[in-house]
Length: 189
Image (tube, rainbow, N blue to C red; front, side, top):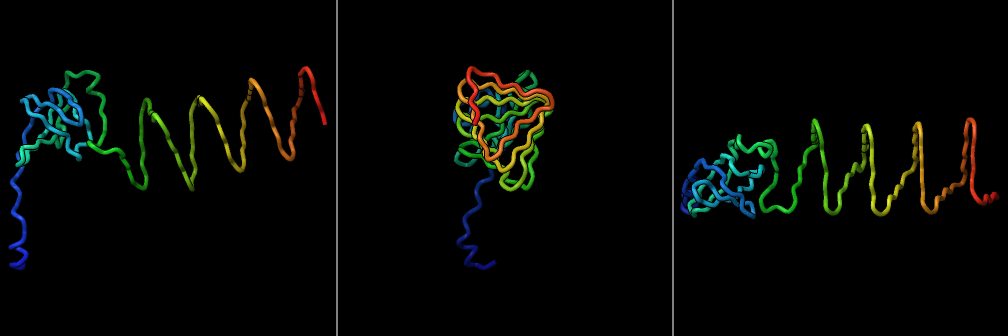
């Protein structure tokens, strides 16, 4: 190696000190109180949020700052809390998972929640929804825009409180048995 490079190379940092501890109290801002009284922050690389009773691996740096770098085990006495886990990145406002293909698999329930906006985009592909029952609940408006719409069902019921309008260059209503039009006034033409 060049002598000039060796002279300007910074000194090697002190080796961090690793220690096992348990989480005693969850504090705000991704910090926890450990069972030995020390306070530690969650490292950026520890994506699983620590819970009370978790056995954790803590690194103590030369400047005495402490970080949980790994969760070793969940507390067996935590009951239902042991079966739940939360992924998050301390200090990050946005989390992006970028991969050619991603599967999220739940054997019982999957939920997507947002207090504001939620987008599902398949810009050049297909979006498929398969379910036993499908429910939509919308407080304001539903706007559909499409080139073609094909629907098939055994029964189709539509109930509108005020105005129902259908318009097209050509409109066909066909029935194999009956067509019933019932109103106080019917205008044709």
